[in-house]
Image (cartoon, one colour):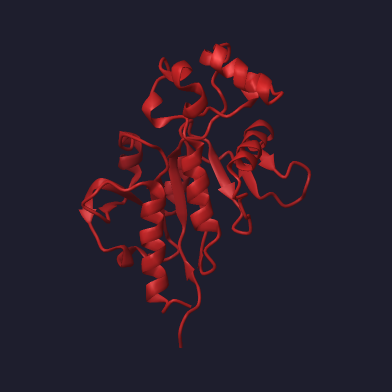
Length: 223
């Protein structure tokens, strides 16, 4: 008998999602964008396409200001009809966001940006409903790694066929980077039970997800 669904826990690691930090909140580029959107500068998302010059002085600037990567990743994960599981976002500022598997992220990027600004300002979306679609939790990555066995995908990891990742049971969680450049921090690599690579080439976040989801759907017989 064919299965028509598969459980796969995922945590998107060091996601480039944050509000404009206080160090650059008074930069002209930040103020200009905030005024255009009728928002306070500190309540807007950090975005390298808008804040490139302002970001030059920030620590780890090469891994920050790319919320579009998270947007693309969520579209892949949350619109797949058969691959389900617990989903967390670990941000570059070490916030842990729990994502409701029933959430359908807006396909329009500008709407997504507004939603993420609301999430980081109020801690959850929707703000007033009993059931949240996304919520900033009090969890730490260490607690997630204690709850699950963490598998991290890195270019430097042991080579593995993506289909092998589809065989992970509910005790495991798959950690995929959601930042533009660089490697994982030593802290994250130290929490990993396994470190794997699914390609000899560098892959973008959505490419990693698409390869894994394609492999899992193939195992299911393309339901």
